[in-house]
Amino acid sequence: AGSLTAPDVKPGFKAVPVSFADSVTVAEGYSAHVFVRWGDSIGDTLGNAPFYANAGNTAEDQLIQFGMHHDGMSYFPLPWGSSNSSSALIAVNHEYIDRGLLHPAEPRFSHTPAQVQKEINAHGVTVYEVSQAPNRQWSVKRPSKYARRITADTPCRIGGPAKGHELMRTQFDPKGEEILGTLNNCANGMTPWGTYLTCEENFNGYFTNYSDEITPDQKRYGISMKGAGYEWAKAGGIHARFDCGLHPNEPNRFGWVVEIDPFDATATPVKRTALGRIKHENAAVTLATDNRVVVYMGDDERFEYIYKFVSEGKFDRSDRKKNMDLLDKGTLYVAQFKEDGTGKWLPLTTHNPKLAAFKDQAEILIKARSAADVVGATKMDRPEWIAIHPTTKQVYCTLTNNSKREQADAANPRAKNTHGHIIRWEETDPAADSFRWDIFVMAGDPTSTIGSNQGNLQGDIYSAPDGLAFDSRGLLWIQTDMSTSAMYHPQHATKQTEFKNFGNNQLLAVSPADGVAKRFLTGPVGCELTGLAFTPDGKTLFVNIQHPGEPLDDKTEFNDPKQPSRYSTWPDGGRPRSATLVISKDDGGVIGT
Ligand code: FEO
Ligand code: CA
Ligand code: CA
Ligand code: CA
Image (tube, rainbow, N blue to C red):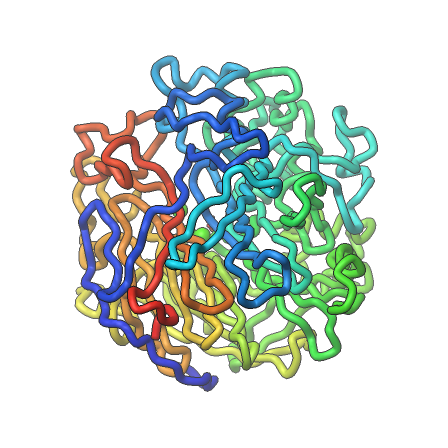
């Protein structure tokens, strides 16, 4: 543990061992059930949901079914504000798709309009209604007037300084005010007024640029000629917008935090441009002492930054409507971690003399990464989730790994960083412009023969911390995401040495006082654990299993017999499906006690 101190709370369960099995294991005395899977009905109002038919469902079916690859997720009691309600809405992200699972047979990857539309419809967000029976069993309410899919072509408004800006205007949206869709919805956040924040991460992968010129701004966000293989532009029509050689401003319209009102299925999602354009992981929200809204955000790529937004207006608990545009006005900062354990929040505004080359505030926000480069922010080891302690408001951030780091610094002390670490900081007030920081834990395997891979973990071991959340008692929950390509040697389909002792990806609980971890749950083969939401009473925990059986590339048929180590049939014995688990304690008690 570092120089900061934190309140102690101990995980009360008996830890589970590492697992290599194609199944979920959870601590003794708990039950974990598969709740909603990719392809299940969301419960649309007409009640005409199609049955899941492996890869046989159409694009239209997919619009009223859960999307693929569940990620961040939030739980909204129904009605909003009630603390003992037995019904609720859950909003869940569908980060990306695996085309080898989504489409039935060859030609699987020809980018026909029908295929591309199904891919688009499997992305985005689902809002659905749940309820708990007196016997404590949870079910999805079908039909529900709240049930809703938001996809990669649902119309979204642009809010904040970049609305209408010349860099946001395109052939299909000459005013720069409406964007079709949200992309690569990674993790999430929840506002005190009961809206859902969905965060756009690796949007670059959907764009192609077949022109001779990839601009420096496009390059800064990872745009390449072929993207990640989606090549949606090939379907033509409106999808041509994904060729940013022809439509250079279209990528500027992704990489934002998007706010959704889950309580109104007709509400238009809003891209909140005041929070900056990066490859967003999650959005951790709290209030300053004076009720300004503060949002912490990580940019998940090697050598990227940690950001903080402070709103101009103040949260008004008595009038929900008044808060709806609070995220449109405020100041965006980027973090600088100094060697002496202090840090500074550097403002990304037109008042900052270092940013004089930027024309206006909108340009600073659209090119937030380039602005952060100029002001001297600290390049981090892939900032993933950020979590805020419920009482101390200390902030924790997972830095999942960085295989490319050659120069260590105090905040990123390993070169290279194979297993990742968790950094934390403390401010006098969430709106403060400085902080004190330390490193909470260095993940690793104490038995590694490579000294720098040993880390300093106590209790159960893990690598690649990613998902992160505090429960209301102040216990810190960590989800891991060791990448399949790092864990398995592509030729031999065996576990690589440095990862062989960790088993499958997992969920652990840790006391913030001492960093001692206990493994609570292990996932099936090839998955990562990501996304978690507690009910207000702490007695139910929803957790996502993402991409079970992940292939190394989607040109491989799923469950390729040549790749047996990645064979997964979770959860149904057939085609692997991302899913939400519902977890409860058998004695009805609080999770983690
Ligand atoms: Fe979508 Fe950085 O994880
Ligand atoms: Ca993640
Ligand atoms: Ca992943
Ligand atoms: Ca990750």
